[in-house]
Image 1 (cartoon, rainbow, N blue to C red):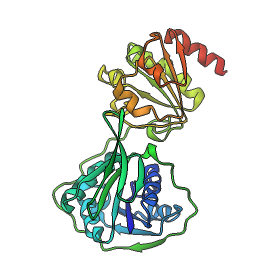
Image 2 (cartoon, rainbow, N blue to C red; image 1 turned 180 degrees about the vertical axis):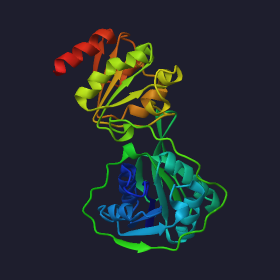
Image 3 (cartoon, rainbow, N blue to C red; image 1 turned 45 degrees about the vertical axis):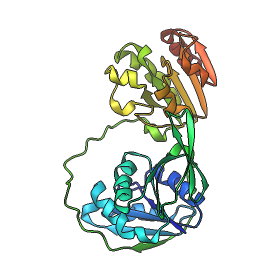
Image 4 (cartoon, one colour; image 1 turned 90 degrees about the vertical axis):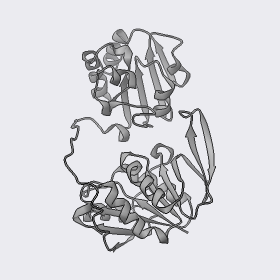
Length: 309
């Protein structure tokens, strides 16, 4: 029994989500192999070889993998699939784009967003916006799994796995890379941040989000938002935290002017410590908060910044 983890990377380095996925793969039992499909991705392959618990790193290096096109990466996974009992990828946009194609071609059911491994064929995953946990048992010969990274600790480094080159699958030819627009920020990346300051519809406007910047600066935090704030055009889409946004689990999550709709709670309730600031004492966000401040955010936030010195 051997598990294959599809590494998420930018050719130069691994994404943190890969480390969480390796942890999930190890809990499935047996050896863990990591596939690095990229172009001039030696640095990413070397990083993968140093992950504790990884027995082998498979490198498929070719120009058609340079931009991580799902069609091409899926073909590479399928070329290797016969040797594995489990195929896993992080439940990020990258993994969610690749694995459904793999599952369909293998004629197996995908098991999505697992948060726990009960046994090699039984897994737990959230349903109904996280209000219930489903236990799923699969009889498929190959388990195709996306991993909710907040459910697993990141694997440690310090390993020394063998690195092996594999024959690259050909260009699938159905898609081509056009362009990529990257949001640039001096703040930490939202899904990897240890502290997040999020604003909701209660902020009132996009300009009012500037009120949160000094707080985020003091804490070295990423900034996020609820779907209501994003839909209102206050902030960009990539700030959205929630069921239809980014799933986060930082050490500290500060929710400002967020009522706590179920879709938002699904994306952040696994945070280690949650602080809520809202003028409505009945706001659902207080049901998951470790600390709550009932008050006007336009008064409380500046006071909090002042106290932080």
